[in-house]
Length: 442
Image 1: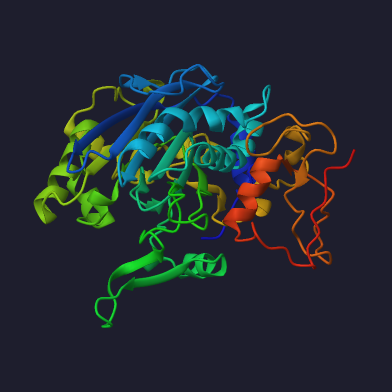
Image 2 (image 1 turned 60 degrees about the vertical axis):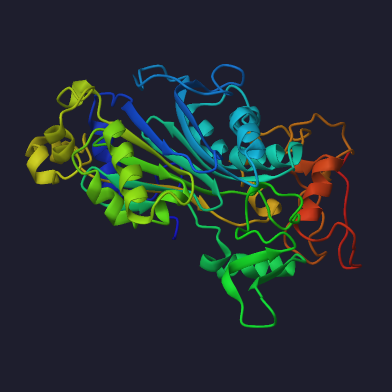
């Protein structure tokens, strides 16, 4: 999907922006309500539920948990919700649950404005995913990782757990990618170009059966955290999508493949129309298990991003009818003509801020000026190791000499993260004479 808006809101019509400036009231942060449900078959699904998490490391990351709580007025907090679906055991899922959030937050420079923090988050998510994978490479896990900062929702994903957004008016947005090889031809091409083999199980020389898999290992996914035994071409670089909701709110459904193998997206949304978050999560899991049986761990998180009480009727403990109205209303039914004219309340505008799914670190870690200046030049862009001038290697160091990208510019990687990058690109043990790895300038 194309990116339709920049972080500064340039994709929004000028008239709307002017109307917002004329509206002299501060739009408060939303209330966040959530529910979780799970049916376990293998014991490999884990969740992270942090309705109030500080932006700095060590103040809310880690083991998770927490009660339903409003988003509050504290600009220093975000909300974090995630599903980790392990395979071949639960170790990778547990480790990622305990460490990913701190690795992401550690990659965001301190003392940023709210707008700068939003702009820095996509790169920090890439760095946090890769560092977590680099630190723990046995077994594997999928990750769907959601950060809610006010009305901005950012989703980073590897694997086949998915996240969808239903806006207040009823429009559906897909905020994650499917990294199953069967569903992603571009990923098949990337894996084979990096030295992996892709094919179906072949029995006694007959036609291949089952889904496409990476060999060796037989994994059906092209991206995950861990899985070093399968090959470095199974990369941890996440698809990242960032959107801004209107202050009418919306609903997120985050679920593992145990749900999506049984229910299509619209079925899931239809089942939970009018239900509060906790009941909605339980209903989705129940219907998934009823449809296909308990074949796999089946996990769902539902998150409601609601207008604060000041701008809407109290919704802390909504009744069935209230939620149904909220997620099916039309702009003309809910907004006065004066509100529409002043542009103070956008009825159902979901602005796409950012979307990128490339597996190439050079592309994902590079941020154009002036946003790129937020990051420290002499820190490794992945693990945040502080390096002396001349120690690091530019992420563009393996670009062809005729490339327009200046290989002398940052960001830079430490030696171990550079090796990780080369391994993911299939270049660890080979060098082509057309490439020139250049050190960081002194």
